[in-house]
Length: 183
Image (cartoon, rainbow, N blue to C red; front, side, top):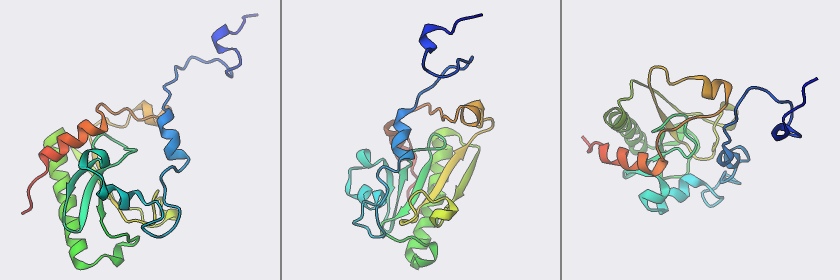
């Protein structure tokens, strides 16, 4: 009869897996910084970010109606979001200028990510409404997620952990430097 190693005692059933702890994700899981209501003064991070410095808010670029910001909980390194400054939840409620600049910033995000990181593909889109998967449903935001061949590996599939090769502040600086001028 083998005895459980002392280090494993009380920690559950021992197995052959190492653990990679990501306690910083607990804030996301618990909904920290999620708006508490439908208004822009109800703790909306997308309303707060434009009042911060680019570095503190992880803002990559600012336009007249929208801004591009790094996702604080990215799927891949360089995961950006394009957000209108106006607190609006539905794409159909954007005015013509906001719609046009959101599309332009999405194109510019693709260009910056290709230049900065050699992204080979992208997932681009928005989740409108909580039932559609929007983490912050009260403020519309379009995701631009860079992809590379083989970027889905055992870590997110088995370990439920994403491995990012660069700090968010360093990624923001790199992408801001690669952000193309308006056409």
